[in-house]
Image 1 (spheres, rainbow, N blue to C red):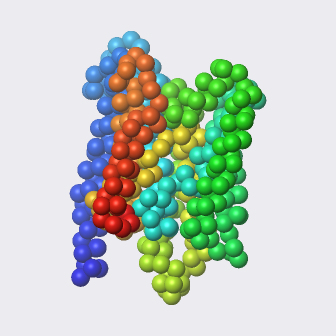
Image 2: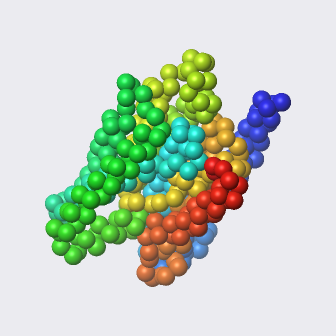
Image 3: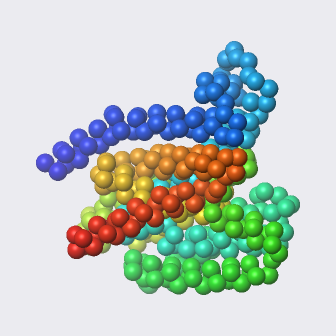
Length: 351
């Protein structure tokens, strides 16, 4: 009966949930592109996007609107979509590997490592030379932190959840201390630049940033979907997974590596955006169930939808000024996280 129920649920997700969410995402992408300090009609926004993707269309646009849409807002919205999808997918995989819905990509030290890389690039004055230096240094820092944590938590080729989490906490605190020390040695404008990056800023994102994020996030997400069945087996426990012939150590190492790459690619173009990898997979698990073959793609779309919507709010709530999208996600995510803790305490068990 459980197998039949699971198959029916997957069929329902493919037939109804996924198409509905894709349509919602497309609508939100266009809406987020249309609204801002200068609102542009929804229909005109669609025509401008279609024209720039070389889809034949006869339309006249108001002067300047085409540049605003396709070269300023739309790249930013695409970056927000990629970042949200990457963080949500990383969260799903982390929660599945550790069999804990409270797990988050941050426990791998990716955020702290990215912060150290970013402040290093800013301190060296490299960000003024090219926009590629900050994402490059942030990615290098996050991957280095993940590698150190993984090495520290490995014992005879095996990685336990508790050791990984404790290693991640210790290394993250150490890296944060180094980052704080570097911040004391740079001048005011550089500190402001770093603080804006840490709040998850998507301001001035261009097509170059979208290209930087797209390749690793899309590639790793496709590979992670291919490993969804193995992730389902890992959820059964170490002994059960080994009994069906799964090399748990090698699988976990690969999943951790792919998760680190995905999270680093997201953070390097957006800065630190909290709670996406925690709350989106948790909500989607309640809606579509725990099967990662459907949970990963659904969470990717939901994460993209969530960050695009939050970025839209960050731009219009105090227009013409804007706040970091990470602030908006935290304002939404923190209360939900407290709700999860309260519910767990009330039920007297784990979430």
